[in-house]
Length: 125
Image (cartoon, rainbow, N blue to C red; front, side):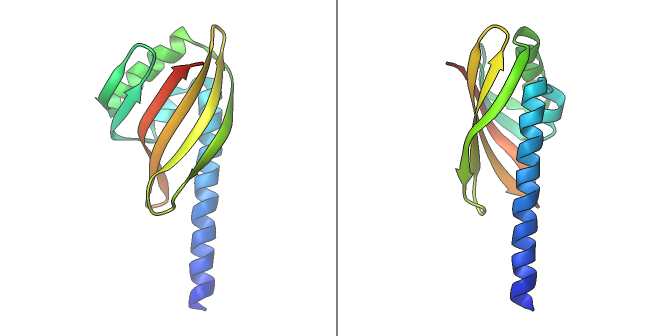
């Protein structure tokens, strides 16, 4: 009985992370900085074309909002993801904008079944 409950909890955790990853893909495709920021840790390492550093959640949200305002997204596709369930995980994606294409890198932890982004990179291809 105990192993059945453990298996169910693991499956539920994987399902929740997969759903959050899908939500993140939609948020990137829509250029929804506020929605993405809901997954930010209190401080986030960000590497954008014009800004590099460690920022508090509010400042990181504003930088991402400014990026999307200057680069309206057309589409977003997750290319690769992986990691450990006990440690950090990652997601690599392709963000097509009206002016250019970018590769995105997310590094996140799962805290109580919720994704917390600790690093976000957006690099022009």
